[in-house]
Amino acid sequence: MTARVVPLAAAGLFAAAVGFVAAFGSNCPHSDEWYLMAEVLRPDFSWAWVTAHHNEHRYVLAKSLWYASLRLTDFDFRAGMFATLAFVGAAVALLLAAVRRGGWSVADVLIPAVLLHWGHWFAWLMSYQMAFSAVVFCAAGFAWAVTLECEKRAAGFASAFLALAVLNGGFGVGWGGPMALWVGWVAWRRRSVGLAVVPLLAAAHLAFVLLTTPAPVSRHARPDAAGFLTAAVGYLGLGFGPAGLEGSAGLRAVLAAAAVLLPVAGLLAAGRAILVRPEERVRAAGLVAGLVGHLAVAGSVAWYRGEGLGERFVTPSAVGLAVAWLAVRRHARPPRGVTVLVAVAAGGVVWMNAEDAYWQARFQHTIQEGLLADAGRGTPALFLTGKHGGQWQIADPTGTHYAALRDAGVGPFRRTPPDPAFVAVPVAVAEALPAGDGEPGAVAVPDAPRPVLGLRVRVEQLATVGWQEVALVWSDGGVAHREVAHPATSAGQRHDLVFETTRLPTRVRLGASSPSAGLRILAAEWLVPAQ
Image 1 (cartoon, rainbow, N blue to C red):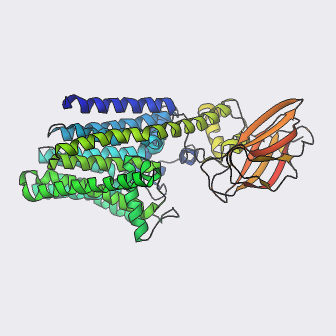
Image 2 (image 1 turned 90 degrees about the vertical axis):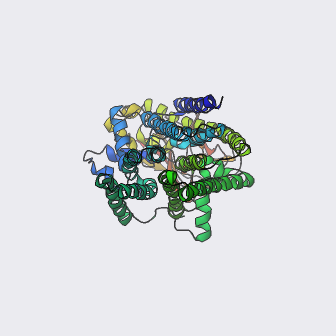
Image 3 (image 1 turned 180 degrees about the horizontal axis):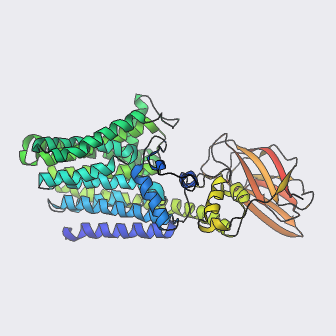
């Protein structure tokens, strides 16, 4: 029975993940991908971009794979999403193959549960998140390799995963250091010059990366001791899903405790095997190296991001939990009560992430498909930016990225015409939009003085919000019209909302159409076609 339950559960969860991405993945750039696209589409693009920093990271592997996936699919961003699933699916298969050598337990469903629950929605629905899923694959591959019976073969495979891991940003660096030490130790044990090559090169690369890493970009970086510990534990708990950050206080405490105890249990089990089971010493030491890598990444994230954690860290954290369970299963004998509890908890992890992930993914899909529909209708970049550019998923507040996609003929953006020539005519409006829940009210806008293209309103956000919508309503020839736009979401950010209107709008009103802490209106202008 157990021999069928674990692989069937893994297959079912993987199929559900594929269906999730097929349903909610959009052929649209997401957040950082907007400015990355502008870089790779430049006429003077060079492959030096691959080795350049992205924030503090050098994502050599991920950038190469991301760029290749776009070029090979005529810039279909969903290709990278399915590549991410392929990496994660391969990681699950490798870890299950490793744990199976000792005979499967029903509790082994924890491995596919933590790696394939829908709480990974952020990583699955952004093509560039191959940066994280590639590290997951390398970490799982290393854990699988070190459990092989043949020491030389184990070190050879581990070297391959080490070489890939260190080319993939800070996460690869964190995992790669302990990996290199283990492979180097095995090379020394076997007096093998060949096995020593990869760890020596990896060590040199790691030294180069660490010496050239720029200062942290996050305002939460370099926390005090208490903040560091809180952030590190928060990162570890994220492997169980975003509830590790966003759930109730009780749930967060339970997940944090489990996320700390599981690696500790793995380290204790593997450490004991090193001391009392000479025949398992090398394999146990390899799993210790993997778990030290997981904890090193947690420390790095805590230092460089502090409390600025988010859903994007769920995926790299989850593989550490899976490796920890592998270490427990390989080198300890959990009693039946523990295995039943772990199996039930695995089901709980899948369940507790499903509903929130569904709504998050649906919301993101709606935002991106709305932009694609407007671009497909031939909306100029001026109006695309003014309507969508304030949302963090669509990071193009100036319209330059839309223009780059248009000029390169990418997707529906090829139908985006040049911005029309216009003259901005200032109009007097209230100094702020009202705050409140629901639709908190609107302010009047003077009628257009003559035929116009639209209305531009510069606003300043008064509070940090997750999402906000502003609506412009008007009448033209007795017909009611409505257009919406989305301002920037961080307190103090300024953004030009641009509403495309009919030619002669009258009875014009502007107001928040979602709960709002208020927006300061800095200027309003009718956009009149240039003569």
